[in-house]
Amino acid sequence: MLQSPEPKYSPTQVPASTYKSPSSATSMDQTHIARTVVIKGQVSGSESLFVDGRIEGTISFPDNRVTIGRNGNVAANITAKEVVIMGKVQGNVECSDRLDIRSEGVLSGDVITHRISVEEGAILKGGVEVRNPEKKDQKTQNQNQQNQVKAEEASKAKAATGEGA
Image (cartoon, rainbow, N blue to C red; front, side, top):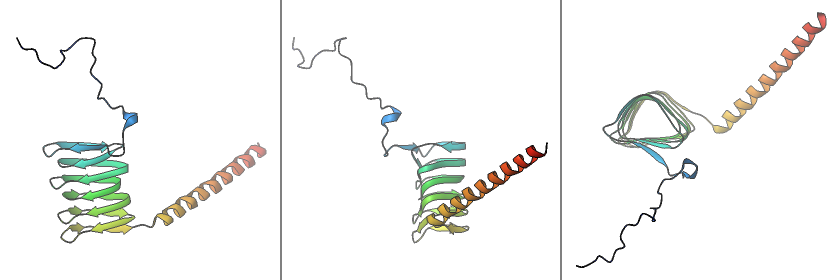
C-alpha cells in the first residue's frame, strides 16, 4: 500500500488558535449587516458598521463610521463620527466629522455635521446644519465656565444660610 507523504494527525499536535481577542482588534474591524437581515431597535458599537440590510430604530456609533450600502434601507436616527450613504435613510443624521451622500444615496431627515459632501444625483430632503468644530469647543468652554459660576454661587448661598442658623 502506498502511504501519503502528509503526516498523520497525532493527538499531541494542537492546532494554532485563530481567535482574535477584542484587545487586539484593529481599526479596520467592521460589523456587516447583510442584505436579508432586519433589525428593529437600538444598534450601537465601538467599530465601524456597514448596513446592507434594514434597520428600524436608532444607530449610535459616535467614534466610528456608519456606511449604508446600496441595498441598505434605514429608518433610524444615526449618530456617528462619519456617515456614508449609498442606500436609503429616513431619519436624522448627526456626524461629529463628515457626511457623504453618494450619487445613488437618498436621505430624508435633518443633518448636523462639520463637513458634508453630496454627489450629483443624490437626494437630500431636510434641514442641514454645518457646524464649525472650533465653535463647538468654544460652546463647551462657555458651558463649563457657566457651570463653575453656578457652583460657586450655590456654595456661597449654602455658606450664607449655614451662618444664619
